[in-house]
Amino acid sequence: MIIGISIFFACVVAVFGIIAVHEYGHYLAGASSGIPRSAMSVRLFVFPQHVALRSENRWLHPQRDYERYVAASMALLKSRNRAGFYVAGGLLVQTLAFVALVFSMAAAGVPRFVLSPVVFALVSVPCLYLLFDLLSSHFKKKPSGDFSFLWRISPVASCVLTLFVFGAHVGVLLHVLKTA
Image (cartoon, rainbow, N blue to C red; front, side):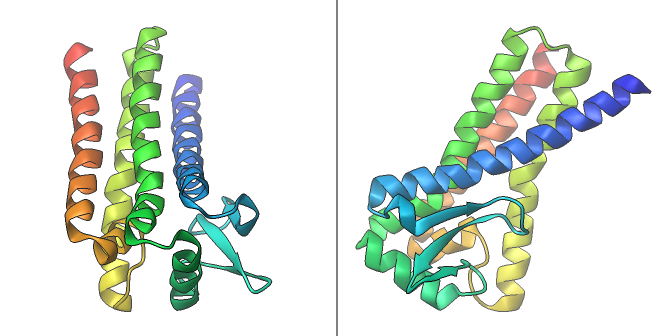
């Protein structure tokens, strides 16, 4: 029973950690694309987690303040390519961190009965994220998450990123299942 509870908490910590990595991926991509660090704030202890942008002495939420958030981000980023990188940054960094974490855990000798549930939990994150993004975007009739925001900027980039994210996650999952 203690092992089961420990595995559960390992999964929870891994999921929260990967969400934090995701949001800081946006932050780093934004900072490298022209958004001043002082104009961004990572919000981890709210739902949904996000990077708020400061505009006119107010913090903007990417969903609740959609029009103002887009206008503020484009004023800072100045191009669709930079905007695309800012939006994609979270998923790119999250995916790279996921791959590095799983292979580090495997190299450190973490037993399969711990590694497999953690990997399953981490693979579920982008799956659920895409599902909620698609459903919310459909019902709200506006982008609601990274996949749909990126689709608005560049459908091709959105498709490529989605294939990369899911290809990497499924590939790592299959590798863990095969080598165990």
